[in-house]
Image (cartoon, rainbow, N blue to C red; front, side):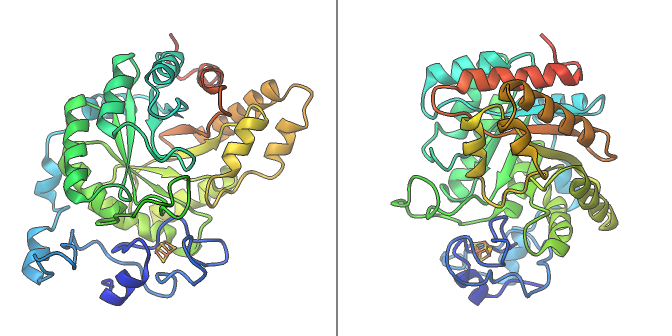
Length: 368
Ligand code: SF4
């Protein structure tokens, strides 16, 4: 299956390897009130990076062949030092990654949160935020984080930069030596706090994964098992793995059993990337409220109530998050956990500290 020009035009993100992770549970597009154009068509097979059809370069088969990535010799690109170190660590034990809670474009907050996490978690996922679309550029942010002794796992999206700007960021991240690069298509600008901005979507997450791999990175992608088309999400992950993804962050899917089923489905597709499930990090009403803003969120039954109705929500949150991590880490194929969520304004450092406490409780060897 190759995407037609009509499908690319109809998809607000102009995706080649759709659907995105933002398909609503009823099958409608995250951007408009119509059905996602990728739901009724077979999964698009990895066929390389086609030029943008609107560029003067055109879309001839020769162009596509020139841009084709993912062949064995192209996977032989030497990993940059940060990627090599993270690969070596992951060969010895599961890892703990924490979403980065620092305020956007605030160097002091970034420093304080990085210091609260350094030596306690294996890396911090510094990605996108719907309530703060403007962030330091990924490479500058990673440089600041790593200067505090904390490994950055940098999120890069296709909404805000075209392929040339993305290649520049990937080169910068390789120079900084980040532990990993998380490649996402990204939410549309119609969601979040900057609907005034034009979206780019020159390429999508699958194509970005190939570029990141070619730049020497350890590459992660996201997949949402609970999001339509549920029965083809593992198939779509297969194409991302063929493009160059090493790691799959499993979006909030509802607990241990849905994650187990998704990993089994991926194995049936003949792929075995390292799986890092997202674990909802909730320790108070502020963090619960932020988590609820995530798209296509599915939580284990009663998870939030158990925390928020407790006499001491902070301790109940630490207990619930730790238990869920332990259940996920016991699954075959799980390479680590991602403490996923964010803090209420002003509670960023306390939230980072809570993630550090969970990591210490898990006892995987990241302690100060
Ligand atoms: S849900 Fe995503 S992939 Fe589907 S049409 Fe909308 S933007 Fe495109």
